[in-house]
Amino acid sequence: MQRVVDLRSDTVTRPSTGMRRAMAEAEVGDDVFGEDPTVRELEEYVAELLEKPAALYAPSGTMTNQISLNLGCGRGEEAILHEEAHVFNYEAGAPAMLSGVQVRPVAGERGRVSPEALRRAVRPENVHFAPARLLCLENTHNACGGLVYPVVPFAATAAEARDLGLRVHLDGARLFNAAVATGEPASAWCRHADTVSVCSSKGLGAPVGSLIAGSREDIERARHVRKAFGGGMRQAGVIAAASLYAFRNNIERLAEDHERARRLAEGLADAGYAVEPPETNIVLVASESPDALLRDLADRGVLATPGRSGYVRLCTHLDIDDRDIEYAVRVAAEVRTENPARRVAGSVAEKVAGRP
Image 1 (cartoon, rainbow, N blue to C red):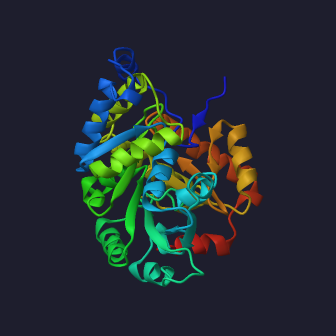
Image 2 (cartoon, one colour):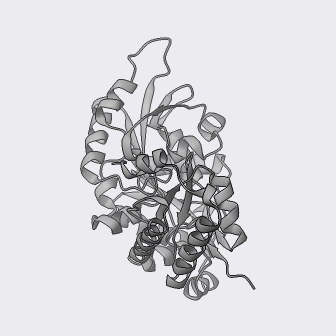
């Protein structure tokens, strides 16, 4: 049987034995009535972890982000975000579909929105313009290769947003990757945001679930919006137990994913690929034929996904071990040797090497 190394995403992980046991033994109740003790324990644990007054459990990161947009903007109002933000590119047009919110994308290096760019994006009050009400920031930044948004520039942009009268939402789907990579607590970013969403179903290894954290008033409103969006769950403690296990046991081990991503990137670079050095668990490889490269890798059992235009994306996670990394590097080297057309042209390689 052919070996399969699944580097498509850190969402493909399987629950561990300990996690499955926690799910099987979870005490449950009706969460729509606020009676599920495991859900309540999870929400209190994450709120304390992020140093926010309250938190709310929901099925997905898309839902927690969209709840946050709904809280921050009224219909016909505007949310400002980075042009490659997950909220803008990968959430199925939900701001417009669910909340009637217009998004205004802004360019920025490394997935960041600078205070200056934010100031330029906020238009004056005028009958012709959708009024800006919310800034969405992302950490780590998915499309930019898992790059960390450091606390100091993050805080500077958030401060500018407040000066401009905007609320701030942090899409922290992989916030704990940023925390582990920098040694900063996750709360260091959260104190600069009104709301924050965090996922348990990515690097932390739970099968489902995200949370939104914020003020008690916001979370009470969020509970209503979650119900309207179809996210009210009943005996949800069965899955909430997996998320609780993930937050309690799998944060520090994210460093292992980062180290394997670094070794994967070095191996691919040694094989002649143009690779963006990873800061966390996502590796971006430049290619003039991403679809062809993906097919060649998949034919040999290495699964990856398209990155942003001109890139292939590989993501390490808790189901990937050292032997998987060695195999993936070996397969990629074989592909490059056997298919010279897969080589990256000099202009692309130079562009990657020159990225800040």
